[in-house]
Image (cartoon, rainbow, N blue to C red; front, side, top):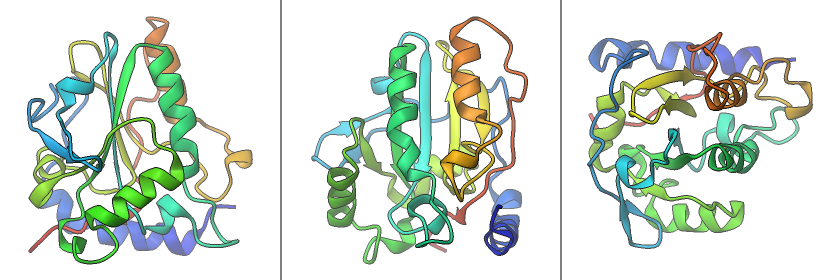
Length: 207
């Protein structure tokens, strides 16, 4: 069963952000596609750098949100599903990037050292980058961690929202929103559900 308390917190947390930074819409071209962001290994990457022949997957994430990392026995968190999704996307010619836009927490859980450790512990095979001053998140209108955006080979948006319908348990997922979008896109089919509500902690922007 989904965690109702977490869901309510997430809904209230992103209300103000929605008005200030409108979220891009299906069919929109990726914002700031050439914007370089520092990876945990010191290299820099932009979305156009990581894009594959069939598109790009951008996942806004962080180190501490319970929707990402889990909360003990109460919720599993979505982070443990990233690698499987990234591997699937890669097999379909879609490049991926993980973006940490929590600028207000750079001296805390979301500093570069903590990000480096997280990338190592989770065995990320794609860049995990610092979005300085939440520039990319603002351009996307990204609201939560996680919040996912899938683009086609022209870097036009084809899916955005949540990863699936159950943060508590990967075994109890009924709708694999992102996986379904990747697979249908790779088959040249229309994505049936191209937008879902993002669910997670608010991105911690500097005020």
